Amino acid sequence: MPQAKCLDGKVIVVTGAGRGIGREIALLAGREGGKVVVNDLGAGADGEGNPDTGPAQSVVDEIREAGGNAVANADSVAEPAGAERIIRTALDAFGRVDCVVNNAGILRDRIFHRMSTVDWDLVLKVHLMGSFYVARAAAAHFRDQESGSYIHFTSTSGLIGNFGQANYAAAKLGIVGLSKSIALDMARYHVRSNCISPFAWSRLIGTIPTDTPEQAARVERIKTATAEKIAPLAVYLASDLSRDVTGQIFAVRRNEIFLMSQPRPIRSIHRGEGWTPQAIAEHGMPALKASFFPLERSGDVFTWDPV
Image (cartoon, rainbow, N blue to C red; front, top):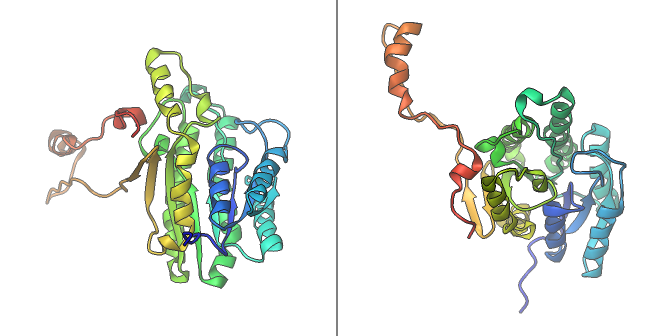
């Protein structure tokens, strides 16, 4: 007997699905019986260039050729009206929406003292504001049907740290807070919200510099973690198989799935008479210093080759 498809009857919206991770999620969602809205603006990795419906339509064609059901949408997530049209595409084509995968993104890497306000604004607009806009556009429908799943994409650039990505890191860590707030606010309606931090080679990761042997070696390791490895966890979180999973942060690196930590107190100090700056310097900070976090990047934490 063939295995049941976990997304039968579900309508899945995947943003940034014309290429890379989003494409693989859309394809697997289609194979698992989901009706898929493939959203992609079709612009460059830095957000520049004219919109192009080709990438989204190509994925739709591939899903349909495999016997699935999908429609294309080329609206920008970075504007509220575009986000509303993305969700409206699902409602017009399939009559409902069951899952939003907030995957769309751009990169504009700069060392901090050279980062322009344009670089900052555009990355925050697409990643953080875009995730809010699309999630908000679906929220009333999720509330009314008392079900739904949000899957937001974060990054170890925000969770851990990286050079030259203050805009991207701030947006991606902001998405973690957004996801947790959605999980708390909408739990009463049986709506789930989770984050995935992916390790996968894509055109965005392809912008990482390889100026040193260490950077080049890191990029070669990343290349072994391909985009299709991210899709199974995303499709699981979109399905009813994950009905009890919400408010979590996962990372995927090839065949590894990690549950990531969330900020909690790890050490405390107190002083009955209160603190002065001098007392903090003399007693307080030395007591806390043993638990300080070093200035690490993702590669300093994930030091072993992908499994």
